[in-house]
Structure formats: structure tokens, C-alpha cells
Length: 344
Image 1 (cartoon, rainbow, N blue to C red):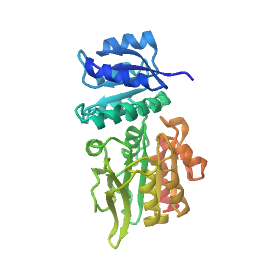
Image 2: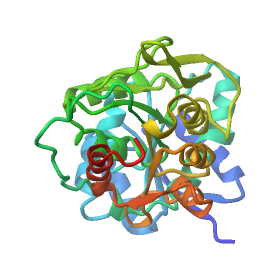
Image 3: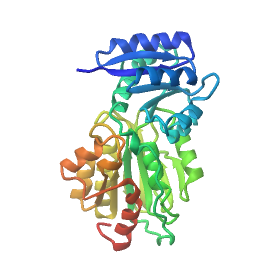
Image 4: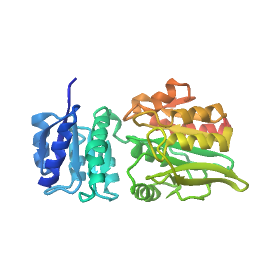
């Protein structure tokens, strides 16, 4: 089997040596070059034609984000950003990066080993399968008239690789009277709060990182916090609320889309809409099927617009997807379902 050819762009000599050594120990990976700045990276891309690039954001001569902005229109290479805890990663995703990982604390041996042996290699392998033509943002349908308030209705969204931009694309089309939205986006711990703040700045709806006990309200999007807690929707006398409790990984993730979707199926039944976006693996497929079986309307992103057609494909293959839509049509379809009262 052909190995995945990796270019490491990292200005720290010590850290780059550690990266190269550990990535080369993975039988599926081969580091073909190391670059210390974007100019060296550009030359290495031309010379070695790597399959995937790992990229530090803070680089000499030019930032990683500026490099992506210049590189992607001419040479759209799948890129995994390695970043300290900073909202700059979302600028990198907007510029065309496929995914990101949090830079580990070198002094924490267990954290460093997990990063080097598991997290980063997995992200690189997933990125190697990304369709780079689908990274680019596309103009979307705009909803002119706000919807009437419907506290009985709820929208649940799940996404993984390619999801931060795909979810942003959908949410930016929602108006302030959209039913309450709950999102599980697979993301390293500590980044969901910054992601929510960024969305809140760019969207017409309110967006916040969810907290235990939050009420699901029209015109508001709640982003499930990353880390070691599962997010569920429960129904109380005054509407839907979130229960965010410590829990084991489900379908390989915490928070898990399956856990969220299962809870929405039980709490809301045919008052819900489930949306499953781009991502590797199968998290969310069983939960989306549970939602459909409970009478909810279900939407899956189609293959042509997914960065990774994994989660939506598994859901589609098992009959969980009622409507398969291009990314640019998902918001429109959601409004149609609400307006026509189909399944909600």
C-alpha cells in the first residue's frame, strides 16, 4: 500500500524532529520534507508533491494563515493545522485547512504521546481523503422573512472533519426566528467556546457555547462543549433544556452526535429536524435513524459537497437520511420543512 506523503511545516527544530520521528513510525505515513517557513514550504510542495501538509500557524517571514490564503487558490493541498489554544485556527479553516489539532504541552508526557501516536496521525490520514474542491466557500440562499416563533420545534446538527466551515455555512443562513439549534461539532477540547464566539459575530442568530441547564430557544444556537462531557436534550414543562454531563465516548467521540440525536429523538419526536454534515466515520448515523424513526425530518449533506463523505454516507446507506442535499441547499431545505410543517 502506498504511504501518505507528508510535509511538516514547523519552525521549531526540536518539535519538528519529534514530529518527523513519530510520524515515520506509522506504517501508513512518510514524511517527505520539513520546512521552517512558508517559502521553504512552497518549494517543498513543488519538489515533493506531498499528499498532506501539517502547518504551524506561527511561522517566520509569513503567518501560516497568510500562507494558506496565498497557496490554496493555486495548490489546494490537504492541510492539518497545529495550533496553540487560539481562535486563529478558524481563520486557517476559512483559508482552506481541512482540520486542526491543539499543540500539546511537551512537559505532559501522556498528552504528548497521545498527540504524536494517535491524534495527529489520524487527522493526517483523514485529511488525505479530503476533496479540496469542497473546501471553498459558496454563496448561499438568504432567507428574507423571519419565521414565526416555534418553541416546540428544534434543530440538531452534527459534523466532524470539514464541519466548522460547513456548519458556519448553514448557520449563517438562519434568521433570528429559526427554531432553537443544538450543534455537536467534533473539535479538540478548549476550542468550542472560541468557535461559538466567532459564529456569534458572523451569524444573525445568537450563538454560544452550551452550558448544563441551558434552555433551547428560537433564534439561538448552542454549541456542545468539547472535552469529556456528553450533551443531551431533555424536555421539561417550559421547553427543551440541555443536560451536559461527564460521560464515556460513544461512537468514538465525546461529545457524540449519536448521543445528541438519540436524545432529540426521545425529547422532540416529529417536532425535530436532524442535519448530518461532513465528517469521517459513522458518528451520528444511528442517532439520525432514531430521529427519523421518531418522525423527525432528516437531512444529510451530499457527497459532492462534503470534504469527507463519511458520516452522511453511513447514515444514507442505513436509511437515516430523508433528504440528501448540497451544502448550499441545506438552509433552504430546513426553512421549507419548517414552513410546510413536514415532520415538525
